[in-house]
Length: 559
Image (cartoon, rainbow, N blue to C red; front, side, top):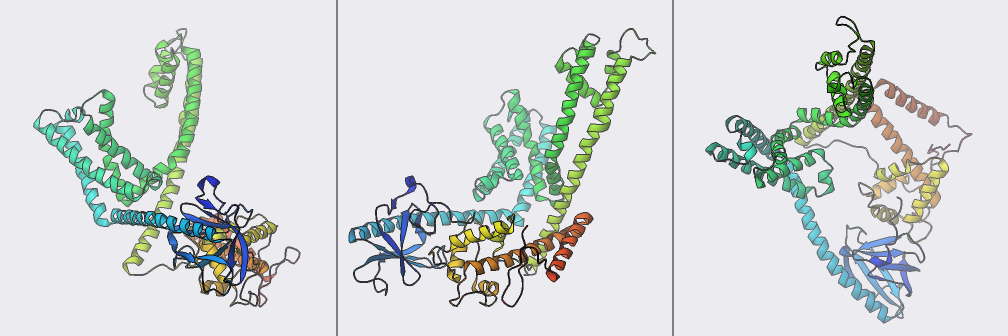
């Protein structure tokens, strides 16, 4: 989205200017009518009749809201109030001035704003403290000491579980038992469960809520700890509770996330499961078909193996597992054929079954598993190399240099254009959103503030004066007042987009070259060569490139 969002519904309005005439001081001297809305968190500004927000002020960043006096554009007959914002905040310390029709409106608006500012500020401070605590919890979880200590706990718990199975096997199913050994192992279980529940609580607090469950490892931790707590709270019980309780032994798998080599293998296996599951579904469907056919052919000859569908499908899986399948084949042999003779129906059935499922489909499953496993391993190895390099640089007090445009999140959005006309339309819409005063031009402050307010981009776009100076070719692309017209704005974004996409191609090219992917590397090399040829000999019959000051062409053509 290239906007600040839509005006919230009336149900969320604490106050709005419906039926009132409110003007906003735009620039230094122009008063323009505005429709304003106050919600519990924001003071929203929009043009009369418009549905999209043109500007907004977080109420927790308002430092002052009072009567405006001493401004050259506020005459003695005007009633106006000013809203000052926090330096370095969402609005960058900008001052907003509004005029109202009478004293009653002034009092109503300033009182409502100041009251809500107090409420919103208190809530924001509480949320800030909470966010700081969450960040501290996440940093603790990442420390090597924490990882080492809980890795020792996991291994110790695994050893205790093995000892429990050898010395006091009944205690694992009774939740404690009466013997001394059972009570000791039960105490160990309580201690380890408490420690792991404590770790889980910190992890859940630091990554609440969806970030926590988006991680497969965290979900697995949650399930194991939940089962452990359940087994302690409900000792003994029916068989299904005993089965659930035995899952405590799976705590050792949690160690995999702390050891890179094991983590890479397990992650690769889990990443390959979806596609392998699809292949396995195909094998299962074919097995069901053979089970139905086998029941129709051999139910009378061998009801023990093919009397019902459940028995038939079980027999088919025994054959596929090569578990005494010869006994199954002999059981369905027609009595008319002698001991040394062959039943053609049974022979054909089992030959087709084994060739189709065992020799072909199951091999496909293995091939798919191996292919996805190796691809996942490569990704894990690549990530491990990146992590090692970052750790090495961090230990030396260095940082890896990354060439990245400050507009990268915006350019990724614009890169989805289909034609040159579509790109122009996207840029024009963006210009209208940023030009909240409808002045027809964009100054640096308007551009910088507007981009920073587009919080749906990650990371938030922060445009410095140096960035603006570079993009405008030392101001040569600006008008006499140092502002950008729509045409100049489009020209700059097209050039930035081309440079951004070239950087993307170069990054992918280097990564694929290191991975040894020859076909794709050759394709990207061809693209780079083609772009070099286009730069040297631009196609004049296509949409011409925009001309930069000094004669350089942008070169973003559309089809």
